Image 1 (cartoon, rainbow, N blue to C red):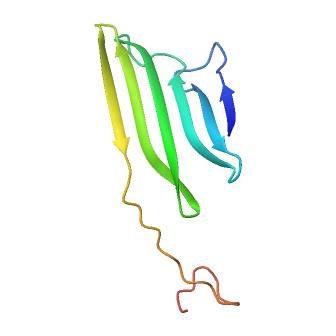
Image 2 (cartoon, rainbow, N blue to C red):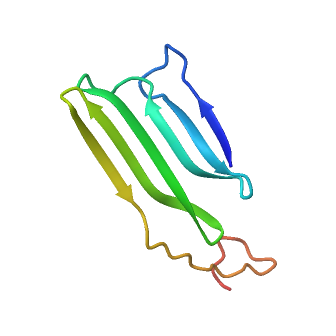
Image 3 (cartoon, rainbow, N blue to C red):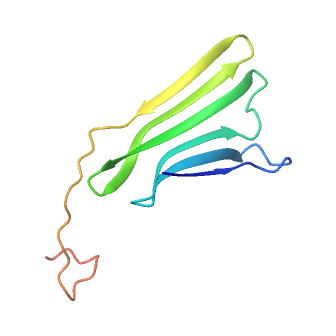
Length: 106
């Protein structure tokens, strides 16, 4: 596993995030991304953590879960979780020599 991280410059705009990713060295794939906004998106939020996880299905790395946890100034926490699943990888027909990718007459 390889970890890469980056922090924004002090004068970074709100859209930039600090992030780190955990990668799979065998497939050169991103397994997990952890990030936080460079600036709080609202005065009511003190901290936001964002985490994207990926899973390998067949030969592909696909989203598994996205989770954002925000700590609120009024002693609360808001969590948004999106879970992905039920992926089906369909095999595509092989192209014959001389056919282009847009040609559907196999």
